[in-house]
Image 1: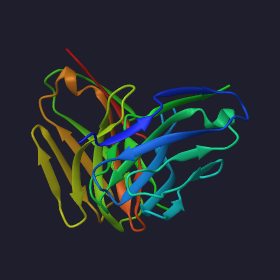
Image 2 (image 1 turned 90 degrees about the vertical axis):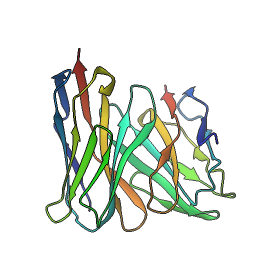
Image 3 (image 1 turned 120 degrees about the vertical axis):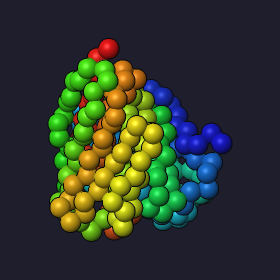
Image 4 (image 1 turned 45 degrees about the vertical axis):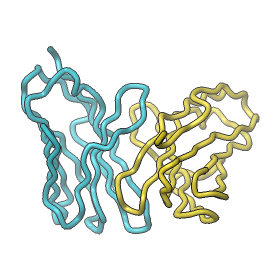
Length: 111
Length: 111
């Protein structure tokens, strides 16, 4: 199994541009999550999904959108990039309340 | 609102020393508590998961304890090695399907 994969690994965006961060898991997990991690900080939950077609907001959802059309994929959309969205983004998946498996992260720089 | 705090923020020890990392949380209504390791520039790797009904979990040189009533967990690392150098994060799994993270303890083990 590849586990949780994320693309791209690194991206530079200009203010106002949009992009989609991709996340795919091959473990048939029902729960998927998007987090952001700022330097020296823990992870903040952006959005999560408990199954295909179901999504919900986390702690810091503003400026982001998600969709979950399949069990495997959980893309995160940034519509109008702002410098405050410069961060490292992690996707994770799990079965219910069990151990979360994390992807390698996407480093995003907004200039 | 659940808050997770980790003390200390950074710790430097000589190789071979036993050490304890601390984690506290404000709401005892949790499903489980998880400890993760994060190497620089990498994603998170799960170390131990303690269910709310358990008192401790062990894996090799690692032992994690949970005292739900006092809102505390400790991660004990025996005979530390330079390869243990990383950031250690604890997270509590709340009702509602969310994992709430602490800010992490950055550990440096000197040869």
